[in-house]
Image (cartoon, rainbow, N blue to C red; front, side, top):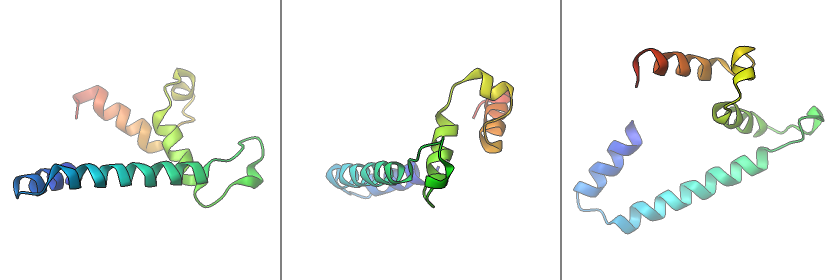
Amino acid sequence: MIIPILFMMFFIAGGGLKYILTLFVMALCLLTGVYQLGKYDKSHPETRTKLSYITDRFDNFLTDEKEQIAQKTINYQTEQALIAIGSGGF
């Protein structure tokens, strides 16, 4: 919630759209780079790095497999978010 408010305040204060788009592109490149550096072969757990935890969190958040949700193999925060949104919305 803080980031969108920050962007709106910056834009209302007279900041250029060019700066906001530049920051967005830089953040997207950084996130993509961190995700790619954290990728590892799940059949060989010894290839994990410190960034693999972040990659696992992204993968768990973006999964839509019903069997993982039913077997509770997704992480706790994702499960709680699904319960919260399902029961009352954002």
